[in-house]
Each structure stands twice: as structure tokens, then as C-alpha cells.
Amino acid sequence: MILTLSEIFNPESILLNLAGTTKETVFSELVGAIAAVHPECNQESMLAALWEREKKLSTGIVSDVAIPHAICSSIKTVAGAVGISRAGIDYGALDEKPVHVIFMLVMNEDAKENHLHILEQIFTLVKTDALALIKNAKTAQEIHAVLSRFK
Image (cartoon, rainbow, N blue to C red):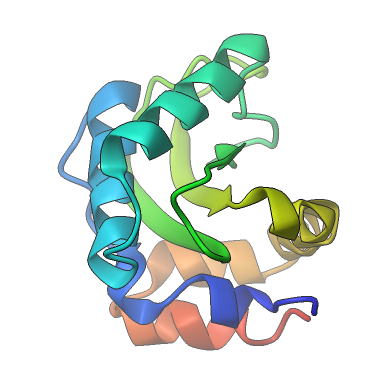
């Protein structure tokens, strides 16, 4: 079954004002948001899997946006968190510019086939006015409503 972005990104895992100012602190914040919605997840194993993937190539791959993602055995499905940094984060992005919106994804091995479809949905989203709507949203529900437009 292919999941939609609104199924993956629960409003409770959408953080409008990331407190972290570094990639490390933001990863911890977003992993914590995923674990709050999916308590079965092991935060340490999620972080380790995300950093392992990040070592291969920065996931700051679209201007202003990063999409850290990894396979993690402690989760039963595909889960995600969205984080907004008003100030921007020095992410080590491919374009060397600060990142303001982060879509973090973790999935189990069985959900891996959905991974490319999910990334495609996010790439489609960031090429539209939806990115500006997400960046300027005042509530997590507003962001969730924008995500629900993408299937």
C-alpha cells in the first residue's frame, strides 16, 4: 500500500519552529517528534541510520529543503517529521545554502518500495507554491492540509 504525505507526516510530528541551530540538534528534535507519534521506534537506532545515510551524500538536495531518510528496523511503517527553521540551518547542502524546511523519513525494510514514490511526492511539492505555504504556515494543521494535496 502506498502512503500519502498526509499519512506519513502526522500533525503532531510537524515542528513549526525548530529550536536547534545545527544539523545534529535538528536531527534529534525531529527524531523525538517521530518517536512521540511512534513510541515503538528506538530513537538511537533512528539517529544512527539517518547519520549513516547522511555520510553517503548530503540530503540537502533541493534549494532550501532537506530530506533526510533511512531504513530503520524499529519502526513498523513509514513515518516522518517536518521541521521549519526560520533562521535556516547550515546543513552542508549540495547548493551550500541554509536549509529552512526538513522532511525527515524513516521506514522499515518492508516499506522500502514506497520510498521512491514518497521522495517523488516531496520533490513535486517543493516545485510548487506548496513550499511557500509550508514555510509561512502558522499551525501544524495548515502544513498537514498542504501535504494532503499530494498523493
